[in-house]
Length: 154
Image 1: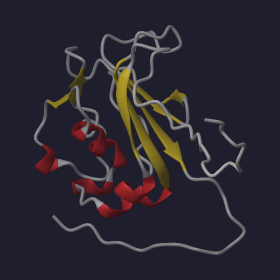
Image 2: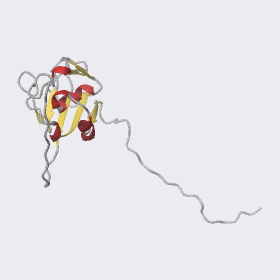
Image 3: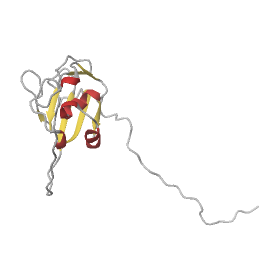
Image 4: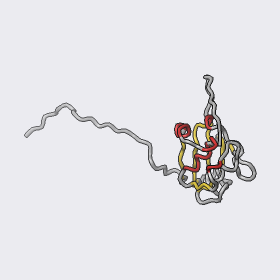
């Protein structure tokens, strides 16, 4: 029996996906995106309070009493088994803490692009805390006029 050469009728398509497990670093964390920030209800309109929803984070104060002008409430959580308020709080990668480890500036929710929470961060780039790292990333500018209005009543 002799086989005849025919035309190819099958094709193989190879696609690549993003790895689900990052093996280059031992950090554990998550990113809270701008769509989640816009759609989640939060008391006090402070995006830093959303860090308390991440895994590895334990709130140490009652989130019902967070006010927009209060710096102790949003930063009152422990990460990765550390003590409360022993975390690194960053705003666009720069330190955003007072001397007593509270958040120095809470930007309005409408100005925040994402909140990156890293509960277990062994990287030497973030090294002056016993807990984790929270980086609040601000939105970039635009050429269009826009704004928002809200009322806080408690």
